[in-house]
Structure formats: structure tokens, C-alpha cells
Length: 239
Image 1: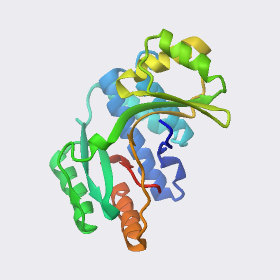
Image 2: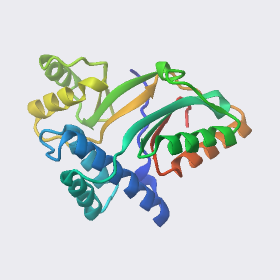
Image 3: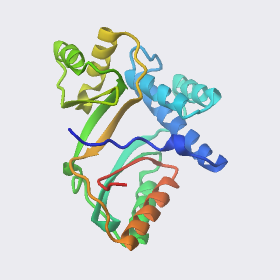
Image 4: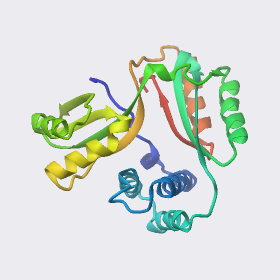
């Protein structure tokens, strides 16, 4: 793919309020992932990767355990995935992923972020065709040929492999996530994945040249990140 990927920014939280938001977002995502795919990480690889990210983001164990216990009980909130897209400040293309128990409220909150920055939310598919929905697995290593062979032997549809600074980055379609991760672990044993995520990757990125647009874009991101229902924001801006 030859392009940088955007890591989540939860671990960058510095204030107690920011950390509380991070914990809340992880708690909600863990609950939904465990409820839909089961609480056993051996069979739910998405949950396994999510728990690893939560620990790296220093989410307290009791927060993680509470979310899993809630999923185990089968009760609790009925969250659904909601995805919105549109053009943000500086003609940026943006995809916003949410987990919500009230889609009408969430849509109104997200639309307000567009409106307050004098931009407009789009219809489904308006910008997502310019992104690849990909699984990304990054880990220490330098033998990309061996990695590629292991993936191909497992019949994984590989989009790209990058080898840089002692790290292997594997990109596959999001539907190949479980197969790719299983193939790597089966071939190379326990792996400490630096990145283990499914993201929307822009096919092309661009800078925002205008200072006013750049400031408005930063304000736009801050407004979105303040929304409890927003889990991830993807964009095509070099930021």
C-alpha cells in the first residue's frame, strides 16, 4: 500500500477527563465485541486484539472485567454500529464510526459537528469509496518473504506487506482479519502485535494548506472526540 496508517489516539490522553473518555470507549467496544462474538479470546480474535490494545492504553483491569461480565450476562444496553461520512473542513474526507443505543441522538450530534464547522455530512458511500476497509497487523520482524509465504499458504488475500525499521506491516481486507492473524500465530508462535486493528485507510492523503481551514479541522476533530458515541474518526488529511 505504501502509505502510513493512522493509529488510534486513546493512549495519548493526558488528563483524567480524557482518560475517563478512553476507558468508556474501550468499555463499550469490549462489551459489544464480546456480546456479538463470545467472551473466549481463542475463538474471538477481534476481542483478543481489542483487549491487548486496551491494556496498552492502560485501561484498568476492573473496567475490562466489568465490560466482559456484562456481555457474559447477556443483558445491558443494546448498542449498534453507526457509521457516518462526509466532507469536513479543508475539503477533507471523513468517516466516523460510532457505537450507539440511540441512533437519532448520535446522528444529530455528529451532524452538529459538521454544521458548526460550516461543513456538511454526506450520504452513505459519499466518501467511503476513497478508503480501503483493511485489517492491519504490525509486529517486530524483518523476513517479509516468510510472512508472505505463511499468509499465502493459509489462502489469505494479502493486499500489501511493508518491511521498515525492523517491523513488518501486513495489510489485508477486513474480511480476512481472523484468517490472517491465525496464520501468523500458527506459523510464528505468540506475537506481540504493535498494531492489531481494522481501519479505514485513505487511498490518498493530502495536506490542508490554509491555516484557517487547518484550525477548523482540528476543532472539528475535538468536537467529534468529545462525543461519547464516537469510537473512531478516519480522514484523508496528513495530520
